[in-house]
Image 1: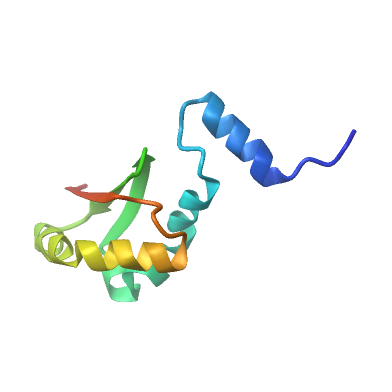
Image 2: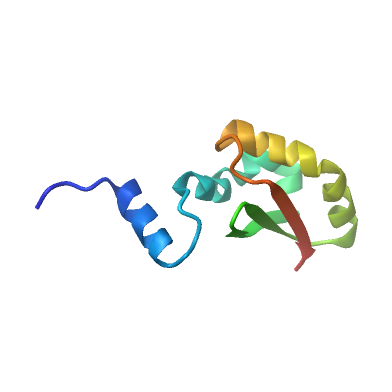
Length: 95
């Protein structure tokens, strides 16, 4: 049996289940503390990916308001640390 790269297998499975086929996008879950910063990351976390939108769960209404102001900065950090153009939008919601 020939060797198949894990990335190709994951892309195939994600595509089959009609999820985003960009495996790189899922790095946002493991890189979140670096993307948002340690202080901010203690109050929010990425919850799911739908298309080119990242949904972020926030633990407090005050932080939800603050993160709305930081939205473009977070998207920029994702572009720099994950992959440019990975997400077009960030949707914030309370737990």
